[in-house]
Length: 216
Image (tube, rainbow, N blue to C red; front, side, top):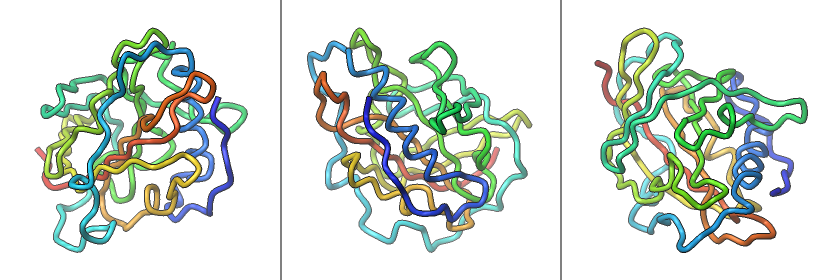
């Protein structure tokens, strides 16, 4: 299991960033440490990283009122998956989807709803204990500008544009950058990534940064 570590105080009052950071890393490593790996999932390239400030300065659409997300679709990498609310366990770690289901996307339900003002966070497994691909196996291959669709319980769909995809070592995870809120409706998708060892599991995290651009 990957160790947690202290983080700075959250900027977004709805998201306990310090707790969430530790649990995202720990939850993935717990399920993946015994996995069978014939190869590694895609890693983001320099072309996918930020070439501008982390928070956008251009116009975004009006934020939506809170509503639970029910499905996430990323056509570019073949993701079309149900979403489920996840919270924190007694140790302060983020719970994974029920039963460790690799096809589900977990949304941190005590934080921002996708499409609402603030930073919404969703996580999914990169693979399974037997080495089969998880829902976010290809997350590192997403290109800037790709569309992420989140269908919500209010029957509205929030459309996000990918602004960057970056890979961080778990000991150098930039929590302020990843979880900090600009006040705009933004989305972060997080999974395990980087190098892998049987002793420690994955050594880092892939993070997708996306901003709300339309609502249907």
